[in-house]
Length: 62
Image 1 (cartoon, rainbow, N blue to C red):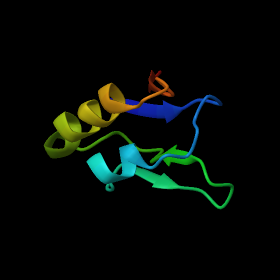
Image 2: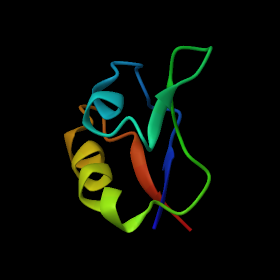
Image 3: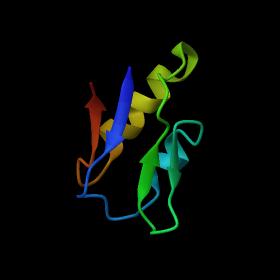
Image 4: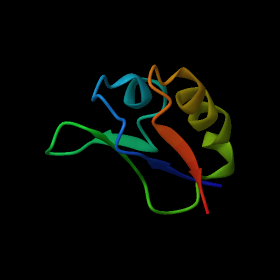
C-alpha cells in the first residue's frame, strides 16, 4: 500500500507523530509520504496516521 498527502494538509504533524517512518514534514510545512510501498510492519501505524488526520488529508495512493 502507498499513501499520499493531499492539498488539504494543515501541517499539524499528527501523521509524523503516528508514523514517522512513512510521513515527514516538507520544507513548505506540510506532510509528505514516502514514495515507496509501506513496509508490512508499518501498515497499521500508517493506517492509524491516516485515520487520525484531523482534516482527512491522507489518502491511499494508486
